[in-house]
Image (tube, rainbow, N blue to C red; front, side, top):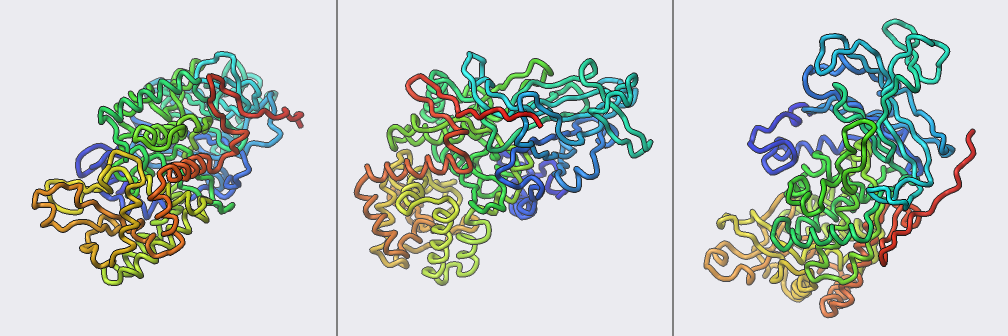
Length: 568
């Protein structure tokens, strides 16, 4: 793992762009990070959890010179991170369902110490880093506090300095020092520096470590834009798509891949639209190749800010700088669908209020929820290759159908429309060495329409072998595409569009092919089923009534509030 986390040796940066160290070793890296699991103690989906993340960065390579973690936390509720610029732990603490407006401090916390002579500051004081959590019925609903409120848990990160006067008279915050076998006490008020209250709170760059508290769970809701702000975001995305600053196929793929890493298995961690795509070990994986646009200024400029960015680094003056990556990816997918002349009204139907999941819930195990993680394309390709086409396609179909219907809970017509919609735009590069030729999925690569389904329907009436050559591969997927001679002949590339195994596999099932032909000849029904699927997937893992809000007619109804429980 250390070798994979090294700085890039093939050019580029390590921020997930093509050519970064992650991408050079993406296959191996994916296999390793897929074994990374969220700790058992916090896996229950009905729990609210706050993550305390303390990372040492820059300067001295040994973070133990500055922070010490509790052994029990490390063993039972922590995820270790050790990569350039970030070394430390993310610790998950369960929030009691009786947490009220008075709030409470959770967990043992992390002990911090900086001896004299170390930059940036020279302080000899000892401190305790903790997360405070409380319930609020009047948290701001929008980025700026304009009087509209929402109901949610909120947190703040606090750095409490040692109390050398009152000692045991203030036992609320303490740390048992294993080196001195004594108990240290930390004062609550004058010696406390806290970040702002919110679903995320950070110390910023005040210390030689970065501490952050992040909430996740069924009682946590995020800020949402006003109708005017939403329209501004939509205008920016449309302008970026029109200018080519961002590409429709990239936007749709990022939107789907963030939301569709989901399983109904109650023993699995929360998936769905959680903004995990903002982490390099997620967007650096092979299925997400090419999605580095999320971290480029062109995308931020389209949104008007950087999605998923933490709160302002100045303690006590923090504010949420942008919308959650989870919300923006869903919304951008809806805008891109309409921009490509897809289903009208989709943008207005998108709900907001998602919060980005903390790192401890964006573990590599989410990768195994995709159909090609241990089956589908990979299984069909590796088991049969190009020799037994029908067996390979049947394997791919079974995996695809199971994924959409059993994992995502979609009706057959909905997932067929959703799959075809995603593959009706864009194309694929790298199948042939023809000046980086791009082979489109259909003749209208910038339009979200049902033309791709026409091609699948025609394939069902054709001998599969007559579609050859189909031996070209990109990763574990087979593509059905023109011969090199046809491409080099100079004829229009649109005459030789590419088909992908997933879609050709639909020809293996008569019932599904009836749906394909129905949607191929009725674009209105195609749009209806695509909309159903898009909205369903965008809300997976959320209570759409209590956690998400619909922006409508200039008004923004807040999520339902709950009764504040009596303190225990």
